[in-house]
Image 1: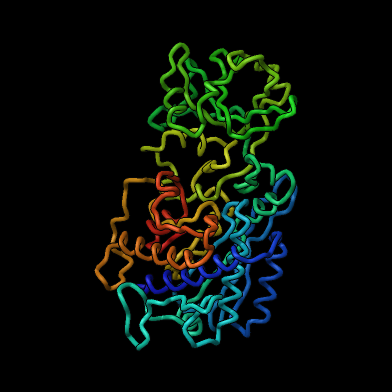
Image 2: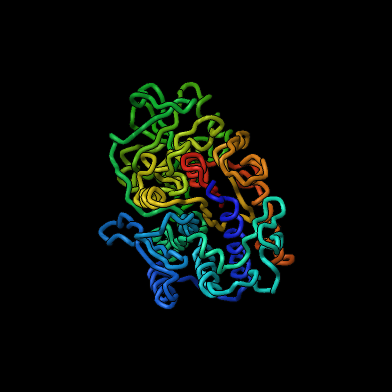
Length: 470
């Protein structure tokens, strides 16, 4: 069935080589999305028909600026976007998060490697001369476990096609390289896209503790929102997503709620819902909230809501985290406590969006996958040294299907884990003692504990039977 294991393992191994090689290189600076688009066109123009470039969609544009193209390069023998003959397709993406600058460079490295070796029938080797797919058999039909015998780029590009999208979030990526974008989220850089979100009191939504939505915001409870903390008047900075602000039941004042607790914690979530006199609930709206340090002498004081509004308490909100916007488990609630505050707040870098597949970027991916025989998706990130497989939404639920069909009788969970460990082992050839580019592990969840709903790898495995990793 679709020869999924062959495609994801081989392409992941060559992709892993490109990642490790780029991380070791001395190149500095990042390319803009426009520069990357021009470079992809140059690669295609010199590919002897092995590559074609196309825009798979456009972004929304931001405050009057024109939309940006989401550019992809298709690589295969006799490349054609219109007539691919139903070839198994592997999709590789970078920069779904704007601040993950290394990933477009890795995607370009993969494209370069495939095209440089398109006529090479010898087993593929990495920059150190080591066999990339060292477990492959040498004789026709020979294979060891789940390791496929396909081991040359020439043969690979006859059998499958690879679609590479180096900058999946071009607006967020380009903005993250501006001075303002670099400063976002404590210097980590701008993560979501840049679509301006709807504003207005009619957009306010409040949640019960079990995650269900109140038909109308409760009038007998304080409404508590994720907020930024602005200390610039005292020589500090704007600390983003760092506090919870609660608006009084009479709508006249607001105050900080337990600033000693971390926003991204179950303790904060429980403390809000365990409040009595007054009762409190978590809410969200299409506006960003900013608490100014100058409004009170200590964190117990209240400030007039009228004054706060006049001095910039409510501001426009921008951006949806595209990798929280996919349809599968987009609205998951069980065991997601503190994510209520973040993924449902438009002011958060992890905001999931107003609805599943609400963003032009996620819509573009839906269209791309719907029109092709996609068997594997490799979504590159730069946040950890891990190879991650489904399910991201839970630390307890396991993949329990048998659709990857590798002929060994292994379950999908066993295949995902084995393939991810193989990729991690390849990556660990590099980096030496530098733990930022070595020490790779295979895991279901980021850092073994973090969960994320509406994630691409979960969605396309569950809904399309695609072998998806990041």
